[in-house]
Length: 184
Image 1 (cartoon, one colour):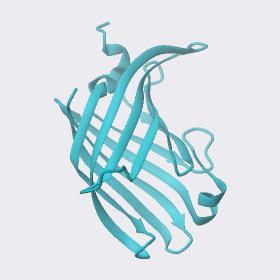
Image 2 (cartoon, one colour; image 1 turned 90 degrees about the vertical axis):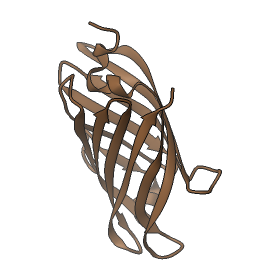
Image 3 (cartoon, one colour; image 1 turned 180 degrees about the vertical axis):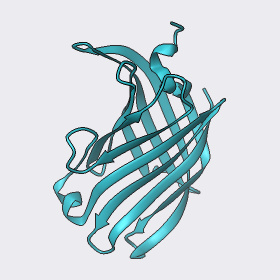
Image 4 (cartoon, one colour; image 1 turned 30 degrees about the vertical axis):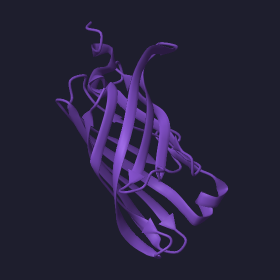
């Protein structure tokens, strides 16, 4: 096995990434409507593993992300978590938390050499599910998360849709997409 093959399709993500083509489409509380926010992003994905759960062996990436609105110095969004690969089960996973008080684990199937895959999580599921704090559960309850990842030489793109029920706006499809390029 080569040094990165244990990480399957996640091997291409190991490293440091930046992208300034981000577009966030979400409900803007100040405007009371859905709006668009361009953003730039920095992501680090550091390899670790193996992690053994009985007979299950996982290889992962320690994941940290920050996003800034165009022209702002403080990030408007951050995430910490893990991307995980279960070669025997053919599962790729992303588990993360945002400081607003939402955490999720999303998963999907993949093969080791895949250059694209889709992850999904749904509220109420014990496998690939979503949790929120009391406030968000009442005001903006996340119900579904779907993320499509595309890998290429020296770049990766994602297109994610987080569906939530907003107290003021009903069901909202919050989308984020960006293309990032390797910087480290």
